[in-house]
Image (cartoon, rainbow over all chains, first blue to last red; front, side, top):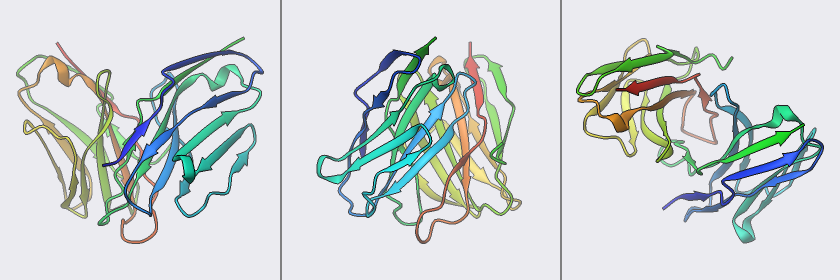
Length: 116
Length: 115
């Protein structure tokens, strides 16, 4: 069965600190996709990144970076020089894309608060 | 703006009642997904429709049902509502789930409050 675990329920940092959000996943499939979504206080879900299981190359996009390691089934997300606007709940998600269904399995989320 | 619309934005109703949530996918998207976000269960997949037919089912209660119409909009019907059904209901759409991966675009959600 698919499972996503985000062990950090809440994190609080001061602006300009770097912060890493952890994500560990479980799946029996060899082909799968991993995601990060952001949910700001306004409530909408904002897509941040998708990685497929065959691409372990880490990625950097501005202040955001992602570390995908199949050996440890982890897909961690780092925000460098955090800003108050980064305050949100961040969700890690997994999709096995079976039978034409790309349903997402979400972790419980990590609430990030960036204080000025 | 993802291009996915959901109505209504907010819904307040009483226990035992029935409500219908509506979703219009992005133009050209054939798949519609419904997710429920509640405090105790988190974000959960409920059901997926593809071009009018049910494609996948998650932890959807028997009191809930959905359908996708010929114009591809979808409705989620919730009946015999209970307090625990209070949640944020998201709709997402994607093009086709046949090869590779097709991005899901999420609507703004419908917040349901059952009193």
